[in-house]
Image (cartoon, rainbow, N blue to C red; front, side, top):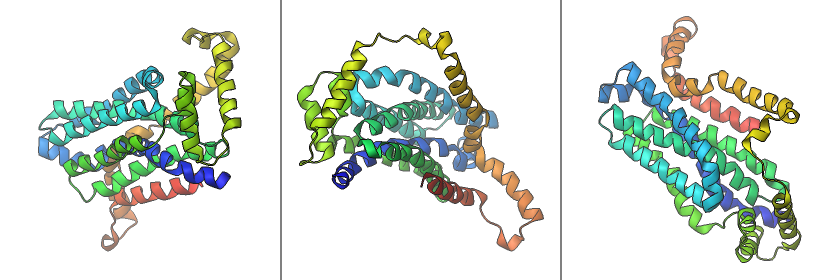
Length: 308
């Protein structure tokens, strides 16, 4: 039974985590293209800094607004919507001839990226079998760093416009793949679509799988949620939640203060300076390596090892 469930759910998860891979592509795009974009479009350092950082503003808007959208149009609808926004962003960057269109495209990508950061883990967790839920949800983070790493590596050998077109590939896989996978059974149960709920769960678990127990558990869970009082944002600030809120938000703040996003956005320039130091003091001229290409390979390798 477990083997059948794993096989039946694989292609659904592959389609879903393409959104996570797209997230990584958005983060890793600006670093290998920095010199080429500034040269081709005559951008100042300040203009390129705006291009790099505006991604995070779009991501904040996307993360805040995608929750109600996901509940309204469903998990598949939210994934498709996020992919379309990213496609618009990539195309704006590809056709851009100046800083304004370039920034609009980057912000659109940021919105899609922020939306993916919410809807992908939710969708994967809701369609995964119980015994595989943790493993398959971890795949989300692995695909993010894979997207970053591959962007670093490919960006060394292709132009910035070509790299923008390559960024369309995971979006296309997501958009077209969603036509062949079912909606989240939990969302269907929550919206009262009983027939579609059972059909989606059966398709996910396999034609011959017995879904009666899982279907009952999902319906009991939805019924329990409906009986609970509706939570409000201000409820988070009650005294009984203060300890948990401070710890969780504090961990997120500390993670962001590490500056990893800034490093990813401008790592080409950072490592160029570091590479000069390493080359001068430690590496003979005949054995110089492209530090960004090396970083991409290292990030991907260690991410795979840490995810195992």
